[in-house]
Image 1 (cartoon, rainbow, N blue to C red):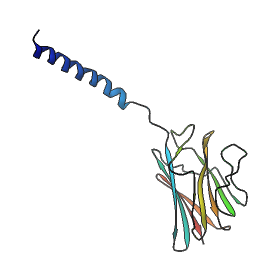
Image 2 (image 1 turned 180 degrees about the vertical axis):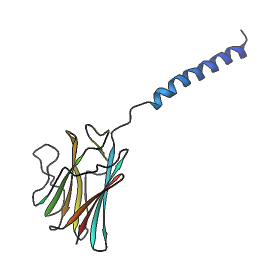
Image 3 (image 1 turned 90 degrees about the horizontal axis):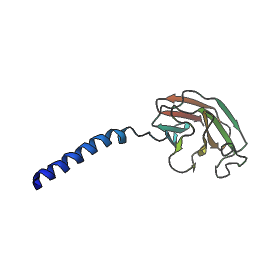
Image 4 (image 1 turned 30 degrees about the horizontal axis):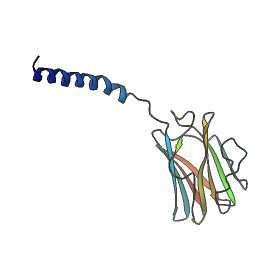
Length: 159
């Protein structure tokens, strides 16, 4: 067999192997959905936005509470002491589709702000039993609304 013919067989064999492997690589299981969050001050209100990457945002709130009790880290008995604020809004949201057992938090775990009302934001429980918990530290009690829009959960706090 000539050298050129042997080289052609090797090249064709390599293409066949790559062709067989490529579908397997593209069929790899994706990681859990991710969530990132931000806060900003607007005319008359502060806004906190939780953005879900790789999943639609939860369309409801399972539980909500605004009080002076610091949130817990997940199901532990450890409080989130790094979160600024005197009042804390805690929301339990259904885990997005594909998020079992958790969502992956993008960025820092606790982000503190010096906004007029909002002092900090955290995903303090990224998932367990089909739900996740997010918390917002506030200067004081405030009226708020929660909206669900595509990949976003938006919380507006009236100042």
